[in-house]
Image (tube, rainbow, N blue to C red; front, side, top):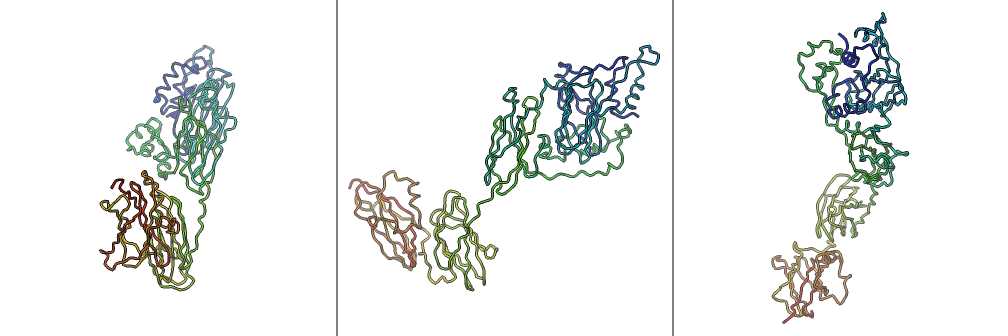
Length: 568
């Protein structure tokens, strides 16, 4: 039996005594054909002026044919590999001459025409091996039958082919500017800004285009087709081809179709037996991001990882023809995270710490002597803060801290402790921390669970306000302060006043009301009241209560705003 592509070739060779005359470009027929995408599916004929997509099985060559009917015809052929390097060559075979042996003008039999072409290998015009988008361009090509042969030796893959005899007017692929490089204009820890010169296709030819940016951590891509093949969820094909005459039962099994008796009916389609043992391996998913941004030629990529190398590619795509061209891609490594300074804690000394919103701070405590226990006192002045404590790399503690907390951990000779403090997502954090191996006296005052100040509305007068707050079983010193505020004193202002680490020493002497000692062994009776006098009628006052510990460190209760009566 004759090979399949010769069967297709017979369709192209008319039985006439003249040189074959397929039209190079019947525009009406061409427009009809490119609208019907199935017209060229599984065909060995390359249409004039339309890009086709097809596939290759590994080590299985594929041939395409097209006819140039007149001498001195411009010709352009573009091959775009997807996902794997290709070997391809373009050759020219002259069409069978008219005539018969008698000079009678009778056409030669079809078998003789076929045999004549088989015996002639043709003239090789161009060959290429690699994964670049490569072109063959000739301003003046002879008439004849052109053959394009493609081969993938690495793996099964997709590819695209475009051929035209009117390259000047078609211009299917968007043009690149004179400088087609992608530049990195700004580099940060998590962001990279890219810029490139606009395509003349948009600025001069006024054709609709859009730019697509591709980001990955492996390598640059030379075509959008290669990107799409890489991100495909299937093995190597973006779409399984439909069964056709050039498939064997193995091909059906490759795509998950059950094999039938078609192989017996078409025995000439059988492939060599070694390929039956070829395995198909699923490819792991690759982290690739593709973002199409319209006609802007500057773009900032965000949410990247610090100290990581990324590859950036830009493709300009023609919205009408759905074809694309690749700029010269680039790569860049994001900046490292700013190295955190580690604060050394001294045994028994209070350290003030500031942590940015969502930020982190590292502290280190290395006792100079052997110890059985280590005690950490933490006073979170504003919002809650997350604390982690590791001893020689082992995690011992992970908790959220509000107000004052004390943690006691088992010690170990020559151990080193690393404390990680993570800020709140709502705002910055301020805290005081103390680490000690000799917690003889707690430096911070003890606090009740409820640190609110309660105001008694019925006891308000035009010149006084009565308030109450809870104490503990430990005898502590309490000081109360007042400050006149506007009637529209809001929550934001109140929040700024809520820093519990600011002590009485930051207040004006005129704001002080009184100080007193207070405690109760019965927690249910550990309540104290105080009447603040000398206030003005109809005015608002901010009241603060400070409790001061033995070591002189103070903690502020939650502030309270009260308003005196206007008329009494």
